[in-house]
Every structure is written in C-alpha cells, then in structure tokens.
Length: 352
Image 1: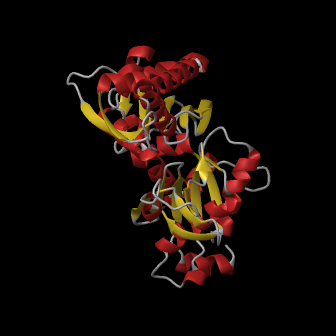
Image 2: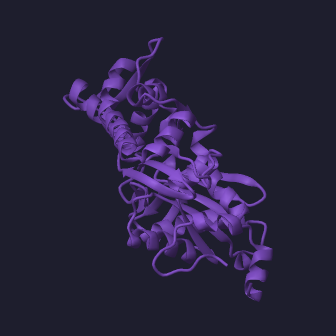
C-alpha cells in the first residue's frame, strides 16, 4: 500500500454507493447507510450553476421557473449528463466527510452499475466517481450487489435468482460461484410504470398528470395481482379539454390495467431467464425461490403474479429499497475476499 493511500485511508470513510435512476443511497464503512436521497439536481440554465441536489431538488420538480431545471442526470440506470453526475457524486461524498478536512477525504468507493452496460458506460461511472474525489472506484453489477445485500450464498456452487426492479432498470440474474450465469437488463421499471399511469389518465380521462402525482397514485393503489380489498384514490391534474384543474377518482383495478404492460414485460423477461438457465441451477432456484429487490418489489401482489407465472416460490428481500447499497457495503467491508465479484473494465487491475 502506498504512503498516500495510508494517509488518505486514515482521513477518509470508504463508501458504497447505489447510484440509482430514482434514488442514490450511500453506505459508509463501519456506520451503515447514511444517505438516501433522490438522484435529482436543480440547475440554473442561465448561469449553469447547481442550485440544489437530492431532497431539496426533488421538491422543485415540476414547480420551477423556466430558467431553473430540476433534472435527473441518470436515465435508465446510465449516466446521461456526465458533469452533473460528477457534481452530484461530489455532493454526496462531501456530505459523508463533513467532519474531516475535505482536501484529505479521498475514499475508496464501491459503486453499483446495471448488468447490461457497455464499456463506455462503465468508464463514465468510474471517471465520474474518481473526478468527484474518490481515490479508487470499484464497480459491482447491481443484481450481484442486491443478491449479496439479500444474504444469498453467491459464492457457493448453487443457483440464486435475483430480480432487482429499480426506477430506471429491472435487473434479472441467476448467480452461481460468484458470477452471473444468465442475466437480463430491462429499461422497464418504476419510471416506466409512472409513464403508464400518465398515459392512462390522458387516454381515459383527458387528464394531464405530473410525474410526482403518477408516482403517488402508483404507491397508493398500484398492484400487479388482484387484491382482496378495493383501494381508491384521487388523481389531480389539468383537464386537456378545458385547460382547467380536474380531479378524478380511480381504483386499484384501473391502475392495475394501466401498469399491466410494464409488469407483463418484466414477468416475461423472468420467464425467459429461467428458460435459459442450466437445469441444475433451476433445481436450486426452485428450492430457494426467486428473490425480489428494489423499489418495484413493493408493488402490491407482484410476488404473487411472478409465483403464478413461473410456478416457483417468490420472496421479497428485507428492506428491498436498500438491498443494492447493503450489498455494496458488504463488499466494501471485505474487499480482499470479495474482489472477484467486482466488475473489471478493460483498463484496470483487480484491487491489491
């Protein structure tokens, strides 16, 4: 270990990051999860100045004047705006190191990426993390991190299946011996479900909904499988005919129909992944069950629908929203023995 590494190591808190399309979570070695904020940045387009990041910026979505834009620098789990992502990462890294001399805070970072990303996209995440102040950036595939965070025996010679439904992507993977055997990465997840509700309101009621309102409707009454008790809520937006405010009552069945297209896409991808899985591993999965993680796992009845369609037991992991960052944290706490699980890009070596 270089002397500079020892110095920075003394003043830095190594961190694991789940850099999600919807939320960014940060795990600090020895402390646990310390930050869970939306991946939103508010920018003044006149001065190019960043006004707010995280919770403060999320409150501005859809409510800003023309020259202030509340934007998400990640789209479908991939960096779409490099500079803004870098600023956002620097904000989160600095927030962790508030008590330490900032110029000495150069942490090692383990950061989650979708499983289907290209070399260029991997490089973008790594460069943004290093430019934001990390001394080393190690990548881990999100389904692998979610499996580790769900305490699945990923290094054993047995099959584990994880389905991580986030904001921008749904990741499906079968894992054995510390590697991903079969995987699918879909650009269909929580954000797409919100769009389904916006489209439904437009088609059925000529009602224009905002993104936040659609998400609130999904959380209040959204489901993937018929429910015992009927749920109802109000949708408020702008009438596309009169241009005036309008309120419409909807129930869980209507929203279930609206969400069915996205949900069906995810279920079909799970079935395809099982079809491509070696039979020995399928036998292990039948015994252990399919594990659901990510915010999409909280959609009512999704485990029942997947179980019905795959004829396999399905379990939702404890606290599915934090599974990926918990996994990144577990790897961070034991980098030496878990380094084989990390993703290597074309231009780097395994951590020493």
